[in-house]
Every structure is written in structure tokens, then in C-alpha cells.
Image 1 (tube, rainbow, N blue to C red):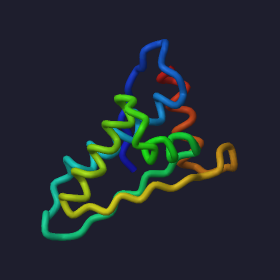
Image 2: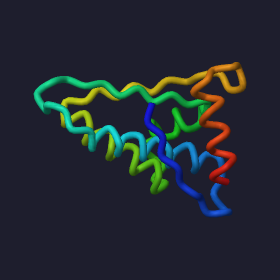
Image 3: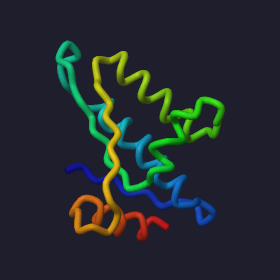
Amino acid sequence: MHQIRYTLHNRCCNNQAEQLAIIKALETAEKSHTNDNIPRTVTVHTDSRITLQSPKNTRNHNYLLEAIRKKAIAAEKGNWTIIFTWVRAHAGNYGNELVDKLAKEAA
């Protein structure tokens, strides 16, 4: 598991934090030094349904959503498969509990 910590502006909402986390995860995957000829997969898990649904709405031009779209398109052109999944919040999922803890620290 790879962890990166950021301190967010005090006006940043939870949705923005979730969206920024996806951008940073995609950037981290993009920087991994693997053979470009080998298909690779990144799975992004989030407990935010709105964060999963918002990038699909192409009429929403929020800068974070635009960044997610651009990163995902670039990754797919680079032989990556991007999978977005929803996980239930506060259900004992170790990764989700850790992310919630880190998000509170960032806020």
C-alpha cells in the first residue's frame, strides 16, 4: 500500500478531498516505472458515490473532475485499465478506515 499525505485548505469539502485523492492516486500510478507494453490495472476504491458518479457527467466542468477525466484518459492511452469501485463506509474495511483517519488529519 502506498500512502501520500497532503494538508488541504480549510475551505476544502469532503467531495473535493475525495476527488483530489483520486487524482493523486492516478498520478502515482502513472509515475510507476513498469514496462509500457504490459497492460496494467489501477483500482480506485472510494466510499463516495458522488465522487464515482460526478466524472461521468460531462456537463460538469469542475476543475477536479476535469483532472480526473484527463488523468484516466491519459492512463488508458498508456495501456492502463482504470477501475473505480465503491466500498461501504464505516464497515470495518481496513483501507477505508485508514483513509478516513488520514482524511480527518488532512482536514
